[in-house]
Amino acid sequence: MAYTSFTDWSQASSAPLTYLDTNPAIGTRYAAAPQVFYFAPKGVWYLVYQTGPPSYSTSTDPGNPRSWSAPRSFQYAAPSGTLDYWTICDSTLCYLFSADDNGHVYRSETSAGEFPGGFRNTQLVLQDSKFALFEGGAVYRVQGTDTYLLLWEAIGSDGRRYYRSFTARGLTGQWQPLAATEANPFARANNVTFPAGAWTRDISHGELIRTGNDQTMTIDPCRLQFLYQGMTPRPAVTTPNSPGASGC
View 1 (cartoon, helix red, strand yellow):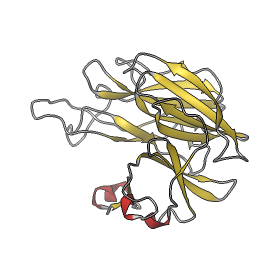
View 2: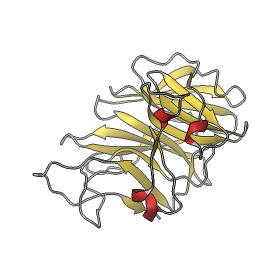
View 3: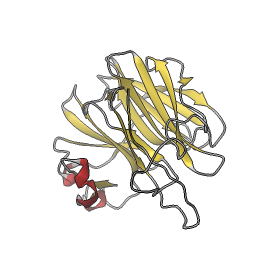
View 4: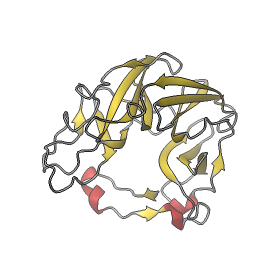
């Protein structure tokens, strides 16, 4: 895991990186798939990630990579093999979503007062074939509504990563497909463009830019910006595409 900061996206490629294994509290252990947010009820920043089990560190100064505490495990009975944990809260409860790289999406819950402890009531909330619901999930509240948007990474028939999307009324509602097929994806090489030329055919481990930084994970539906991980295509592969912003 690494930390970087900049004031404008044009500075992103030149911004310095600080690897979090230089923080002795985190150390050189396996640590991956980070999520960062400000938990307003306690006035503390949380870094949620995987060290095998779901883990978290805390800080009151997220701009200082060495300020994060040693990882602690969430106290809940995680289904075997889960990874890529994502936290989101409504007014009363906090939820922990996870994947298992085998077509299952799980959700556990705790009260906002108990957070980060007390996770329980683990449920299977989405199920599909192994590669149709793979990993890299994220869940957001759509600003001004009671609708939530779930994004989940899949592996397409061409072996490339892409994102499917689902919506629900409330975080315990039933997830309904939105843009959820290879022909009509949320983000895939067939519906994004690269103004400077194609640098990847994989849209992987993405995250929407939120309207704020708190635990509600709120997004503006009229200003969707998707930051994602890609992979340089093999030289023999050519295709024009990549994300950018989409909106109303």
